[in-house]
Length: 295
Picture (tube, rainbow, N blue to C red):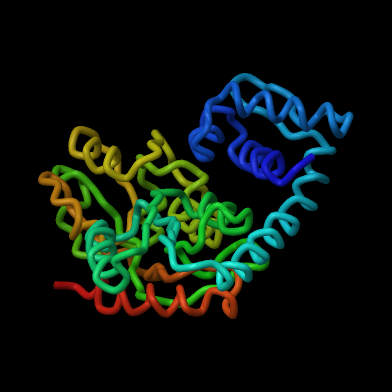
């Protein structure tokens, strides 16, 4: 067993799918499968069971995963500590960004980072909040931009800006004349929603649970653009961050603030180790300064 096999194992454990894990690791699927089989042979235990298209981790896999994360984190810390002994060379920064965060943030962030550190290689990944936190813990990301507070223990955060959840409806919807829509009214509506792995969906479910209600999900899509493209052709509603209106100019849609109560969304940087990552945090905070202000 070596650290490369552990990285491959962690990726497959978190993705639950050979194709997605291989894409995340930038290797072929046969190479990944071969390494996992070799790891199982070395350890003399089975780590995954196939269920349809997904791979389900065994009890042994859960145990190995809990031990693998601190080992990989320790190796990354050792590598970073030794970088000061090497000569100058290209550095990289891997950032996970929610697809529901303002799209104008990404090109502006790239431009400002390039100006501040021209040698820095920036890798941006559009991910769900769950994936951002998982990859931060496994070392697959340096930092994330997501909803606060983070859900996973061991992660820290720095607030950047606040948004709010809004109701999105087609222009012929029965609520089109309403200036605001109460949470109890919205709870009654059939909806087109992001999948349950998305933090926006989880926030919506948590708010409805306070009313003793469940989401009236008639359809699900795994991308915000798909929802906004589809809504004008339906009688359904959706709930999305209000700032998404600025980055997606879709005709035929109306955005209604939610009230009673308003549902705030807090967005910020998410990271593992404040002391070790302070320079990177300061760099990103400076690069993002004012980027979320409404034009």
